[in-house]
Length: 190
Image (tube, rainbow, N blue to C red; front, side, top):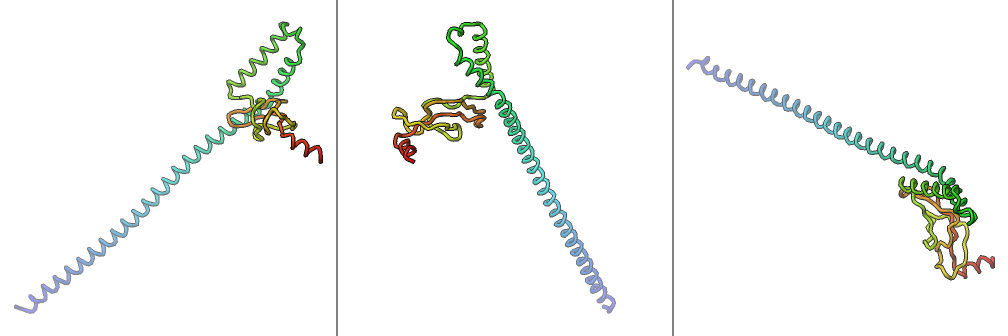
C-alpha cells in the first residue's frame, strides 16, 4: 500500500469530521434561533393575554361607572321631586274635613297617590316608620324624647319621611327618637 492510499482515508476522515462539525454548528444555530423565536412567541402570547384582560377589565369598569352615573342622576332627580310629594302630603293632612269630598281635594289626593305609585315602580321606597329602630344611616334624629312606652333608640314619630333608591339613601327620614328617662334627667341637669 502506498502512502497516498493511507493518506486518503485520513483525508476523508478529516473531511467527514469537518462536515459533522459544520452540521452540528448549523444545528446548534438553528436550535438557538428556534429557542429565540419560541421565546418571542411566548412573550407575544403573554402580551396578548394581558391586553385581553385589560380590555375585559375596562369594559367591566365602564359598565360599573355608567350604572353609578345613572343611579346618581336618578337620585338627583328624585331629590327634586320629593319636596313636591311632601307638599302634597301636607296639603292633604291639613285639609278641613268638610272639604275632603270636594272634587279638587280628591284630585290632589289622587295626584299624590299616583306620584307615590310611580316612585315605587321606579324603585324608590319610603323609610322611617314609628316603631322602627333608629339607624343613623337612614334616619336623621331631630329630637330625643323620653318615653316609657318605647324602648330606647326607637322611632316615636316621623317628622318628614325619608326615601331610598335600592340601597342608596336619597333623603334620610327626620324622626323623633325615644330615650330612657335617666338620659333625659342627665340632659336637664347639665
